[in-house]
Image 1 (cartoon, rainbow, N blue to C red):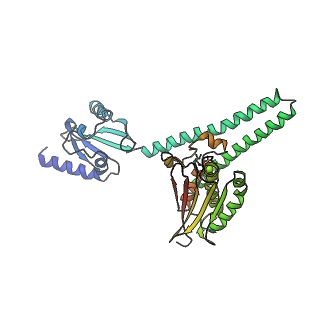
Image 2 (cartoon, rainbow, N blue to C red; image 1 turned 90 degrees about the vertical axis):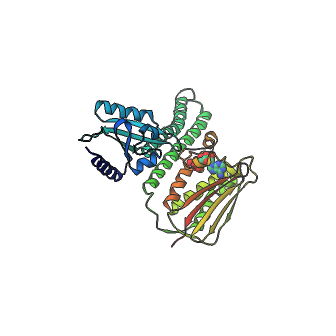
Image 3 (cartoon, rainbow, N blue to C red; image 1 turned 60 degrees about the horizontal axis):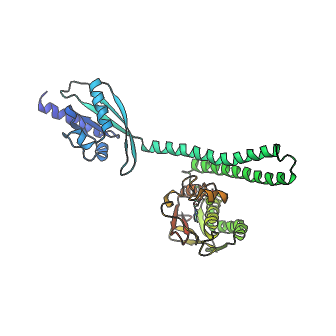
Length: 352
Ligand SMILES: Nc1ncnc2c1ncn2[C@@H]1O[C@H](COP(=O)(O)OP(=O)(O)OP(=O)(O)O)[C@@H](O)[C@H]1O
Ligand SMILES: [Mg+2]
């Protein structure tokens, strides 16, 4: 085969792999790179045509797989995990290209499995967390049932006390299951934007009524500042849930804490150009920066013991985030440890 034929072959191979969406590298004799398509080049910026493959791709497993495939003449598969700058996980396959070419050519293709791996990991964590959260109250319920069947059978006073605790535990499980169900329902409808016009101010008033007794019990003052009416497109129950959760958190983890600078929760709603901004501010202990990005993960709690003691399941902010996303809004969290936290929700105004 003459030089011009070789150049033409390379050109065709190059054009061919350029059209493929997945990263592909074509490797010639002595592990020299014959062609790299743009996705592969983006992945391995140091890969150069005619250079040694090992120069641009420092992954021993991958080089081994190529050597094995070259020796056996059969396709080989392997995986490759890159940790920096972000974790990425690839499935690779390498196969010899049959044909009349003078060079023994190998085709290396990669599939980015990072997203699938992340989702799978989340699923596993989620099942583990949900089971754990259910198991604790369930074990306590069973324990009390056994006590009531045995040692405390005739003990009227303890029976009443234990039944009270059992009721609490059962309510806790019900709340958890309800939260999980609403989370999955909201997730299913994530791409369906709710269309009903609703008044955010009416929702805030309703929330203030519902949470008045909780605020009183915790000796916390709710300060509400809002215009007469602010219309958005949304689902009333879901938006109420957002507001309730944020204010409940501000009471539970902010204003009612002994270290709180003052025992008020400020709830303000303002209209900006095309959106309204709701903010819920407390002056409690606040949240350390390392926790902020993870707060909206399911079951994530800064202090799981404290939250559980206050009846929390750690699903509240995950639900808030999903509802806000479904309403094409944005959730923001700001906090300076020691001086409180501000949770804000931006929502597009009706007709914008
Ligand atoms: N205003 C706040 N100040 C300090 N920490 C907060 C505040 N709001 C939330 N947090 C922290 O974020 C965690 C997650 O809140 P989230 O609402 O998701 O769960 P929860 O309140 O524990 O349970 P749930 O809302 O399901 O009853 C809380 O456990 C708490 O540690
Ligand atoms: Mg909460």
